Length: 188
View 1 (cartoon, one colour):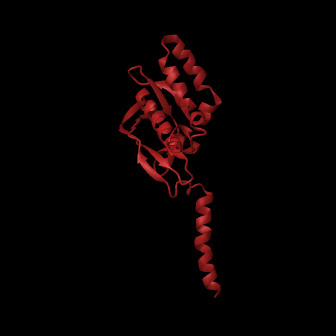
View 2 (tube, helix red, strand yellow):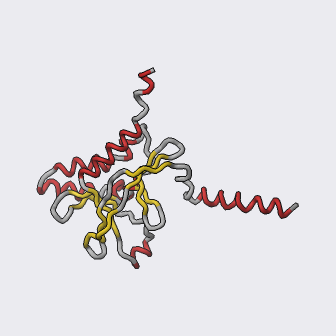
View 3 (spheres, helix red, strand yellow):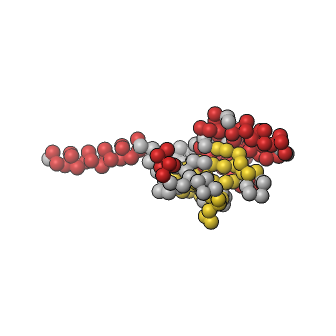
């Protein structure tokens, strides 16, 4: 009899550890290809890799959404967007809008503002930088590669580079999915 109770406790304990560790946040989610493939840049070797990443839109069971990429064995939030909903989508995507403003600037003003944006606490917290592609085009860069500090000292550091069109696409998708049900209440 005691063995039966013990056998039930093990799976429950394992499930609780799994959920509390954050691994369960995507359980029950639906995944959609956002059709955005940022270029991968090796910060350590200072060159682009021949690979691209794939952005996935995650629709969570609580009704919120995430943009994620499949890192090495772990899903990573794109630019630290976290869960976004109709109520917070603009706040969560503020760095994307800032990038679009910055990308419209020219010459010295663009370079000055790049430094200002890159020093903002929110940008640092979310591992976002505004940089340039080799051809001089503006790049929205997500430097979070999922590695711990000690791993960054040992392995190459990889960053995802998004161009202006890709940032516009992500914003468009976010607003489309978060505002999809607004017109339904007026049709009835």
